[in-house]
Image 1: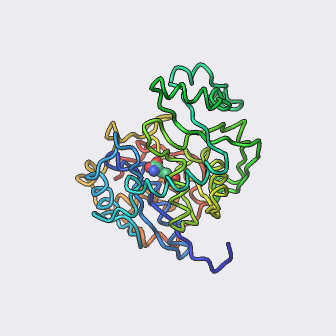
Image 2: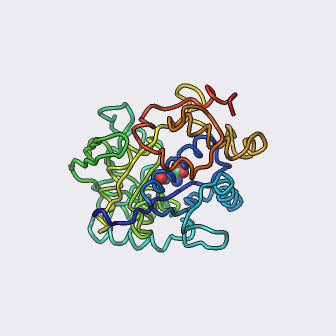
Image 3: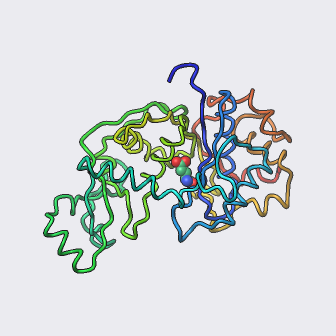
Length: 318
Ligand code: GLU
C-alpha cells in the first residue's frame, strides 16, 4: 500500500442481539484507528446466519453506534441491502464457483459425530482440526451418499503453506495452513455460506484495506489472507484489539444481555460511556466524559496494548 492510499476501515457487526460493552470497545478502537489515519469507515451487517440474526437488531445496532458518536461514510442503511450479507449470496456463489473451478473445494458429508471422531488434535492449543475424512471421496461415493439423502457441506483444501503477517497491534503472526487450521468449511450443508468466505469476498469487493477487530479472530486471519489471494484480492492490513471480558476468562455475551446497550443507554450518557471505554483502553488517564472525535489525536496502539480488560473493574465509575 503506498502512502497516498486512502484507508477504508469497517464495522462488521453480527446483528444477533443488542451490542454489549465488548462490541462497543472494538467498534470504538476500529473507528479511532481509521479516523486517526484520515480514513473512511464502512458499516456492513454480517447477518449470514438466519437462525441468529434479525433485522430489528441491525436497526438498533446502527442507531446505537450513532448514539455513541461513531459515524460511517458508506454502508448499511435500513432498506439498502448492498451491505447486508444475507442479501449477498450471489457474490459468495460467484467466489465459491471460482474456487471450485480451481479444484480447491470438495463436499464433506461428515455429520457432527463423524467429524468429532475423525478430527485430529491440534498441535498447539488442544483444539481439533478436520481430519480429512471426505477429502478424497470418489465421485461414486459422493453420489451414493447424496442418493442416501446426505447433504454435504463444502470445504476448501488447504496446502502445506506458512502464512505470516504483521498485525498492527499483536505483531508478527504465522500459521501453517494444514497443521494449524486444516481444510475449512466455505458452505454449510444447509446452503448458507460460511463467515470465512463471506468476510473475504466482502472485504475484497468493498475495497476494505484495514481490518480492526477483536483478537478472537486473529487465528482466522491467515486463512482469510490466503483465501483473499486465491480470489485475486489484495489482503487488507489487520490490527487486532484486546477483548473486554465480563470476568477473568469469560467473554461478554449477547445472549446473556451482558452490559448491553439497552441497559447502558438508560444509565449513562454517550460521552461518559466513550470516556469509560477510552480509559480502560489506555487512551485516557481518568474516565472523563468525552466524544469519540476528541480522542482521535490521542489514539495509538502502543497505549492500547494487547492485554484483555475486565469490564467489571471500572463500571462503578460510569
Ligand atoms: N461479524 C463478526 C463479529 O461480529 C466480525 C467479523 C470480522 O470483523 O471479521 O464478530
